[in-house]
Length: 137
Image (cartoon, rainbow, N blue to C red; front, side, top):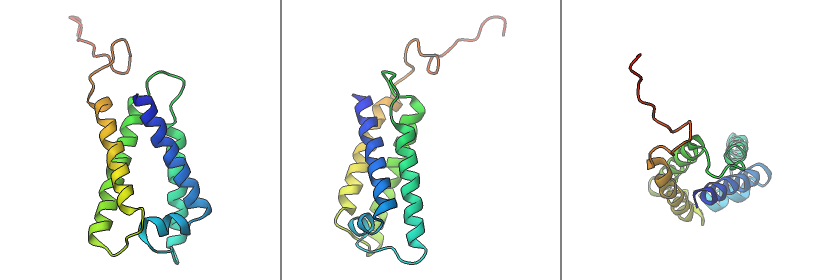
């Protein structure tokens, strides 16, 4: 199940990243209710490049479980973005149609990643195995 959550989150970031790069006005209008002007236009495209790169980097490999670092990266990104978008919704006048649905979606991804992050080491997986010190140490 966790693999599908990671895949959904990664593909969402890829799609949104491509939108920010190609039709910058659309996601800005939908999220913030305003078109980017001046320096905001290249910054919005920069955000798009970052989202595209994040999504590609986090696409699951053919391994059964996603790497913990992938899950942690997506968890931090989604948590941070949920907080940022909620702050924009409360503290500013920039309210687009998709602002609050964006908060809810990123908060939901954040919660969905928690079980994988809270899970103790995976038996047999070298990255998660806890080794007791030997008597020679």
